[in-house]
Length: 409
Image 1 (spheres, rainbow, N blue to C red):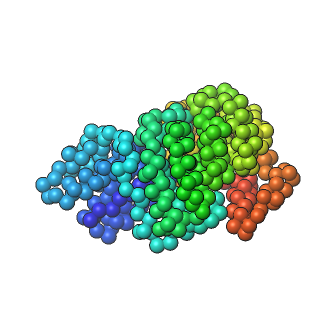
Image 2 (cartoon, rainbow, N blue to C red):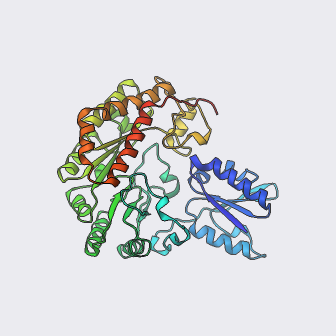
Image 3 (cartoon, helix red, strand yellow):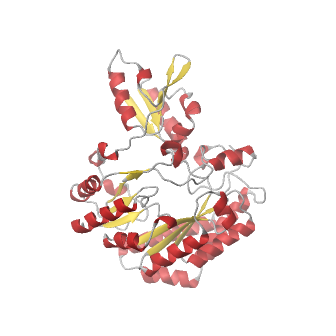
């Protein structure tokens, strides 16, 4: 009766294609699309003939109400907050829905519907199944390249400790999780809640590893937080550093200085954590000199792993609006907006090809050092870790050697 799709920018075109397939099978099936991209570009999404309804922002309550209205022949779509829909040739919009502040009201994901959980695993998982959990929503940050605030504003809500532990208990004891990956945007925003959670998990003594997939803000950690994370078996800590140039760091409004990154990385390493650094190549204001600063800073921080990702100017972000206004976006083909795809923009002093070339230089300068190569070989303690490191090596080599840049679309 109804088929729904959740789409980010890079998956919006496959979403449309799947919706067209649904309509070819049966034009009477109602197609609903939600997620970040329909939220930030609702008009263009709802105009697609294969899409009947879109949900804006958080959609759990919206979809539940929507199903009740669709089942009731006398129900009216205008009673459901937070949607766009079509009425003959007219596009209709209902008032926005308030954010849910009590995340405990949501049931846990229905993992029993997935036949083989092992095949849906993060690339850096060292034991399978590695299952995800999201314990909070929102981020207080105001980064110009991020769209999180387009759904949640800058508000932050986190589930209760009891609720989180109950889900982890289910992941471990029912689904056999050997790793649990936290997918939150800013997990340590509420420090007291995280400390309480770590104490509760330490008492449980689950025989699993924990990963914090999106890293931590360098201004939201201290020794107490890191000791708590270490007590439950977290062994790797990542930081979204973004740039090694202070002016660009101020420009992207992350609110963290190079000195704060230095202190955070030093503290994490002194406590025995393996560290990650995430860097963005091609931010507004970047030049050959500022990118060289970023590479130099990555080498100075000396994390175990560094990821140099090319900026993707996602629609809805301030960066997108700025680059589009200045005519610097070369492609609006959203298939090219994946995290690991080549640049879709250029800068006043850098072509798209030059941005890609600098990413390749960054990977080569950081990883093709004998000390780093030997360090990673020395770290290998198991066959699983060898497989993970080989995947990482393949990613580095591919990123360091690729040449394709798409400039049309």
